[in-house]
Length: 203
Image (cartoon, rainbow, N blue to C red; front, side):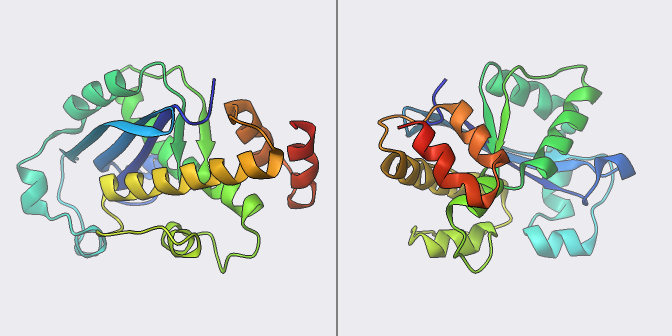
């Protein structure tokens, strides 16, 4: 399976850890096919309790907005259908994967695709970047961004643009026409010093 056909997702949440009771409040995702965004998913979801002022300020999502949103379980049923059979990507995927797994477990659902992390990949490809936060990398790569970070769909859209830029860089460095998803996983696990060796192996 190629790395240019998958789903890139982002959660906004009540806090940092579903293990401590935190819930998702927004999901945004883009479906990419052959390097082109063909479908989008965005929904607010009501977590069953008010969110803190900090989260309101950080995301721009208010308790009033969430009060009009569908419950988490209802939204996650729809999202489970959206991602079925697709590989998944997120920036700092360990965070989003924890919330995805937690919310899907609540509705006795799951997914069959594998996860990749654009943050891990960027640390190996762009070692000279000031840091590897999404906004920094968007500027580092000269990607045009018009919108607000920390809203789920915008972050997913920006991650998609970064992801496609990284695939283009991998294609050029490895001299290959298409990047297999398996190569992404190998690069993400490789040491920074071994990146060129991994790329050369795929020439």
